[in-house]
Length: 106
Image: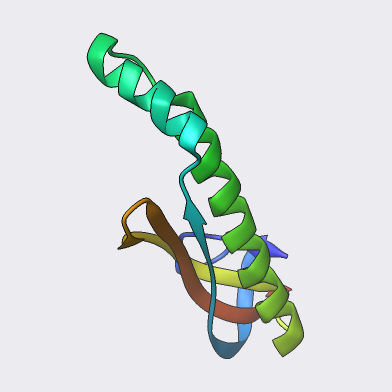
């Protein structure tokens, strides 16, 4: 599955638009990560636990987007965008969306 944040895939022609596809995941913070984040807030530095959590969340949301596109018969998703939002205290959503298409070689 080709994934692009551009409206086109270089070297390919969009033959068919199949519509909007999306993927999301909601993750909660881990108490151990919160303790380490609190210390980092005092001393400074990267919050590696949260960085890993967000990376895993983006990967999972992209996987769900790809599965939805594949179910429509797409071989690519273009114009992909990410969004994040706070759902509840300590929980956030990663949302990804794009347009499922069928691309062909030029």
